[in-house]
Amino acid sequence: MRRMTRARAVAALIVGVLLATVVVAPATAYAKRAPTTTVYRFYNQGTGAHFYTASVAERDIVFATWPTIYTYEGTAFYLYDWYLEEDVVDTAGVSPVDPTTPVYRFYNVRNGSHFYTMSSAEAEMVMSAYPTTFTYDGIAFAAYTGPSDDLPLMPVYRFYHKYNGSHFYTISPEEKALVQLYCADTYRFEGVAFYALSAYKSFN
Image 1 (tube, rainbow, N blue to C red):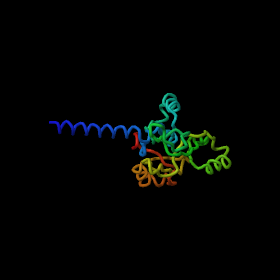
Image 2 (cartoon, one colour):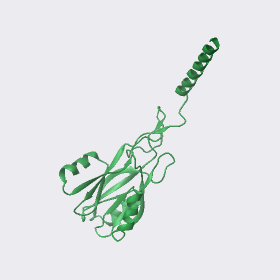
Image 3 (spheres, rainbow, N blue to C red):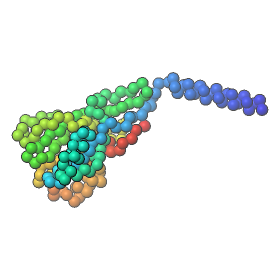
């Protein structure tokens, strides 16, 4: 009986020391916060173009103002706030985000579509070469330039619509494959536009 009591006391002491160590010791492994930005996708029934916005207010305006023009297609992908530009660890041992890069948005006044690019060089080219066609809308959101060791990032693919001059973006490899298989005469594949998250959750 005494041996059992002594064993329990020793076990309790060990557990207590381990718990204290966990509380005091700095976090060497940390979790990623859940994404803070949702990018929504709409389909313009009149032009056949797609529209993407990370603004809840703008999403709601589209809902209320053009319900017969835009069909809501749900979440396109997830990101973090564009101003989170450093990979830091807070006092809780949680890293909010890897560095991101702004994605610029333009409005095509001729066909009513929107164009998104992460390339500052391409953005400057559009502004200088097509000033009467594209109106600069500012930064739409921020995305990633490539894969990450800490986040399950996926490429967002870009297509060019050969007939209406709009661009289509998708993070779904299945949708990409379907477009290339059945709509190759309409959409020209332009590669990876940027990287984003396809699911909303915390990443450990």
